[in-house]
Length: 269
Image (cartoon, rainbow, N blue to C red; front, side):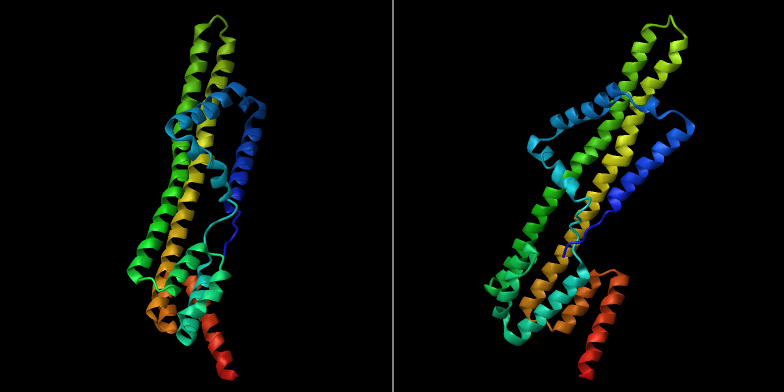
């Protein structure tokens, strides 16, 4: 039920291309490369992260970056169809009949919820345990987002720090006025790096991860609602109408068309 999205990577690559193209159109790309500036801006801000967060949190950065190309957002249209079918099966054959379906599910959250239903756990307990899992997932994901938000805050500051260092070194020796322009350009490169890293990489990544977490939590809410309705023995048609509220207007229209087509096929037979 997972969907892959390359929009984040595409946006990053396109942004890099546009910046490089703009620089080449108006100047020399080599003027914007300075190893010392990179070390101060990127290295310095990362060292500040080591002070700001436990190392175990920072170790999760590569795993969080994978989410940019492997979105955790579930297909809620597919989920609607699955929950509706499970509701029909449970009404016809009983809750115990769902056990075979549970073993084949990709969603651990849905599988654990339905397993509690099959085991006869009280609705309030199911809701409490599933909401606890949601809170735990939310906390885990937010810690990764906080890293990139903090990194985005730190990078411009270290860019400015590098600029100040460059200006101090330049102003110490003013014997050669012709070197002032070159020195000023090098000093300002670190400010460029700080703004570039924060606004094209770190802050957009944090925003992307936050949006994915919100979408996943919304999907989990849909699953929780569906599981509780199945346990309560809600009419499958009413369950479908209820869960339809979790879909976007476009998805609702698509699901409605599929449902109508299925009914027509049954009537025709």
